Length: 417
Image 1 (cartoon, rainbow, N blue to C red):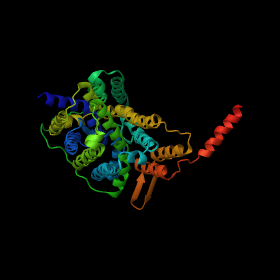
Image 2 (cartoon, rainbow, N blue to C red; image 1 turned 45 degrees about the vertical axis):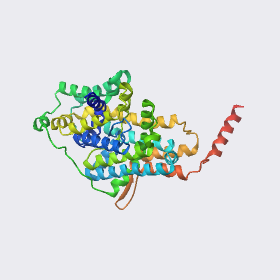
Image 3 (cartoon, rainbow, N blue to C red; image 1 turned 90 degrees about the horizontal axis):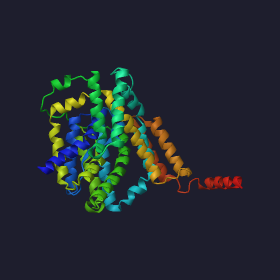
Image 4 (cartoon, one colour; image 1 turned 120 degrees about the horizontal axis):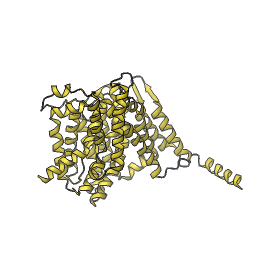
């Protein structure tokens, strides 16, 4: 019974981030709960239930999913996301054969950093439009401007306050707190439509959607897996530090990476967002000392159970657009800062022409919307800039532009003298 309650508590910690992905992208929150539960159970199967982590909706895929759904539709997007999950499995096989150092060689910080920044900043206008009460493209005013400003400001400020000043369990649920406070403000201003709740049954089958396979959507999504794959390594290191066990050796990074990939493929097969390990849950494990992986089994079972509560899914879908917009401003900005911090923490020297070229071209291609296509085949946005960053890193000589930099340094030294 205690483990069951602890498992439910872990889901509460993850709940805000888990549901915000489907709410922002137009996927079904109930299916996301189901996908998180199934994905976590599969991860435990692959890793022999040895790691106390919970897998749920990956925030890194928000912007790519939104774009892909607008361009190719939901089923094709899900097919692309399944392919992204397969990338994890391929990486796991390579890690098993060649070791974890391969990832750092293929995806060094100078590649990963700007790609993560593009993921965060690529749809910044959508966040602002939604915060102002408009549809994502800005074409329709869904909530009056004044009401939207109050609602989005409330959700944004509460999320910030919990992130900075929250103590204990409250510091781990900033997104949940932001959604809850923004919803309360929406109720006070009378902009919540309760019709979906009244029409929903208490128990209902989630709105499962199955994938279709479109080569353009697949090629668009494949490079998006770069950032979550690298983030996965950091998350496994984090939970290893918390529990005092080296999960990179046992069960092994190849098993955890494969587990993440299989979980993502299973979740997207039913219409849920891709899965990733949740740092919020790792924080809760550290806070509560709940090191037993069985607790995460109960978290997964709780998520699957809640997926069939129709009223819960209906409540989530009544959340007004400005609530999400306020949180997106912080969320997308935070993702971009993670990319920037990747460059800083790893001391990527942008005075070196080689690094400058990779970062500069990646950012402009990604944020500017550069596109490359032949016939029906097309690459753009995150997918294009991810491939460009990898290729530039592989083909540019390590000493590219170094002589020029030395000359400049010598010239400055001469001028000082």
